[in-house]
Image (tube, rainbow, N blue to C red; front, side, top):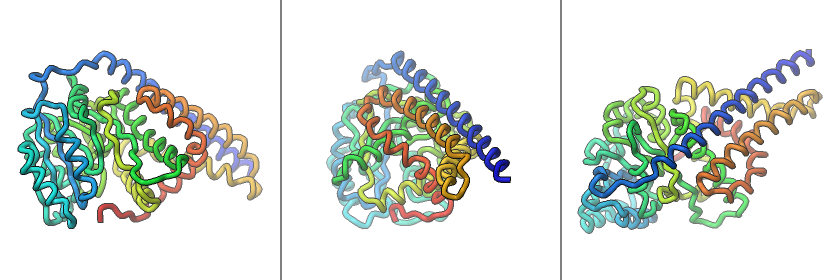
Length: 385
């Protein structure tokens, strides 16, 4: 009986591993396609050709970070008459609103709106963004978070990635560490976060973006209106970025590009504590069941692959030793393909320094995916109250 169970397990493990390796190989093709397109479309538009844009930010209790973001936004090298900044204060209980009011008085292109209540069935951040976008004047919406620090070149470079048929542009946000963190932990966190953008870039290259981050994101306002905004996901606490991308893709409302120019990169604050990291990763994982279609099937397959690797590694002490070599072989092949993809992405993003943290990260990866994948379905998390 044990022999049959081991054979079935090994078969499932190999099939899942082959599926994963094929998916990684396809993503590598996507990176190459994205790089080729970026080389063809790297010219910036003349000032008179630039569209009017609206930079939208939802903020809550951000008095310690919002000053820095305001300074970054007023220094944008985009024509001043062609952009506006809309801040929505979502029930802040600190000095955020006073700071935003002062900024709007000092800078005519900065607008500040305040929300004082909660609308049942509408997640607060999505409601704040929806209010701003529907009242925005811009043809193009640019999004970032209150604790981010976009460079002066951000808006112009992101807009430069819009070409015929592009509904939106996903941008890269490297982690910015504002509190002391051991170098090893810092590198592993940065590599893990970087891998999400590698996936976003590669899938964009394939013509079907899978994810995005609200720290550096943009789309046409008309695309937002055409799909009904966040209506299909408005009850979800998170997901104003990747679930939105998924909905646009599902409705075939347009394709997303990815901005590879370093002048478009927006540093984002890394988790400041283990508790913040824990809640953040559970929040990320909690969205998995809401993607639907092929992506949900893919996520389930990836979860089962990592779960099988963990099971195969812990089986020998329980008298099941026949699975160990198969598990190690699949794990090794999986890791080598991941390294190949990340190496290519690191070259495109000029982040080769992160690769030296690959080995400790890949060792923990199966456990990381298994634990947070499970907690994303069943555990609670806290975020902005």
